Length: 84
Image 1 (tube, rainbow, N blue to C red):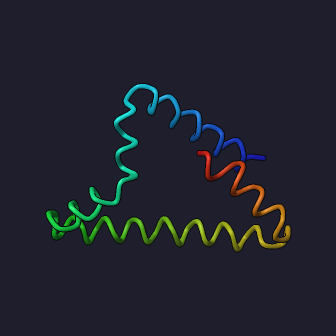
Image 2 (cartoon, one colour):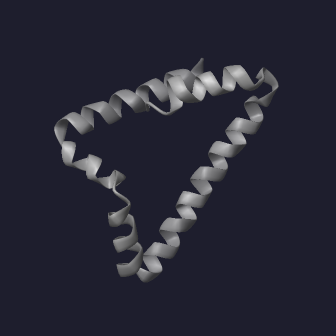
Image 3 (cartoon, one colour):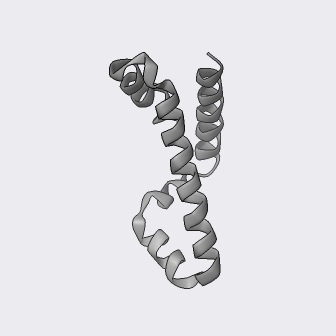
């Protein structure tokens, strides 16, 4: 329940900010990521490290929830996590 509430809060905050500035959706375009990595040499290394830590944290959350079975986890990711 607490994790669901947290993802709900993040999702609502994200929607509010997208409403304020829809141009943030341009970040989905991989061109900007490649251009950033090419321009920011040392900063790019730190950014890739932060992304790695975020992904491994999500993987750890996935493993911790493993005792619920595959179906509840898939439903939670598609209906709660991804929309946030």
